[in-house]
Length: 132
Image (cartoon, rainbow, N blue to C red):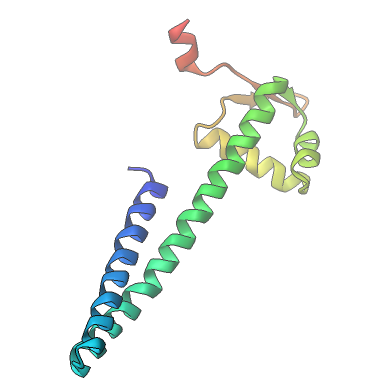
């Protein structure tokens, strides 16, 4: 299971428990059950905090994956790229662009290598070669 999927499921589960506990707290308050309402409200708060954290983290992972896909699309469209061209495209420093490019390769978004002049040359995906 991918890390992003894991955090999506975890955030949905914890936020659902928090919402259920909030409903129980409201029902306890409506039925004038102070102890039950207080306990349910505490549970809602306890589950809400990590649920929001997991939700925010999975959104950050989604944004990261989209950025790496953009790097891969940019590189594949050109075939051979200079790191400084990628830096201009992403509006980041050359070091950051190089790090993004290497991360995209390491995580399988992109296949290729650097040539002797420091340019990145895109290789066709091994799965694409098998299908052809």
